Length: 107
Length: 124
Image 1 (tube, chains in turn blue, purple):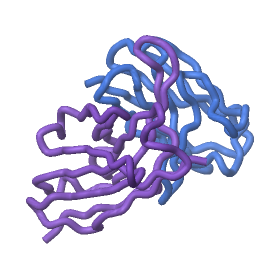
Image 2 (cartoon, rainbow over the protein chains, first blue to last red):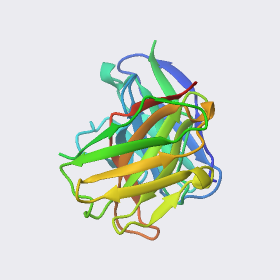
Image 3 (cartoon, chains in turn brown, green):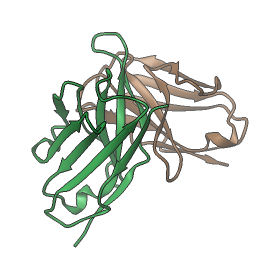
Image 4 (tube, rainbow over the protein chains, first blue to last red):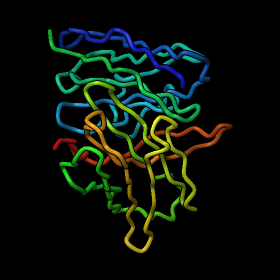
């Protein structure tokens, strides 16, 4: 199975900050990475797919980049509604696998 | 707007079988998507269980393959998951998901939307 490793596991930031979350795959997966946002008690929600395509309705402050084994999710100016846990997921080959999550907390 | 809704028992006895159903609204099981299941537990995080294609073929996570069966009922527009020989390690929130596709080889794909999830506890 392809292992997806996110860093950091937890991140404290303030409204207006720029934050970057990193995801590393255990082997090359081209651009087959998706990112999800999950708030407590809710299902994950798609934010970005195929590395950098914003899901409909997702604000432009979210962006994604990378290829091969290293990927990033960046939020350019944190808003209160962005505090959540974020997961990367590889969609290159089954079994699809997820990172362990990055909890984004208010400082 | 496509919506998914899981249903099933919240409690399963050890060694028992979990049976979950996902009702689909706003889309048809004959549409060009795959219909899948993902679970989330504190110990293992998010884990892909498997998917069923519109024609009925399946692809399961090898870690669960011996205990899992997925099926679909197009007349009811719903799909189902059975997990046999449940243990405490199977305690999790179970989500049904739509796997959407784009172009490319392999095809690009992503999960959207997700059902709200159902908490399943394995306990005697």
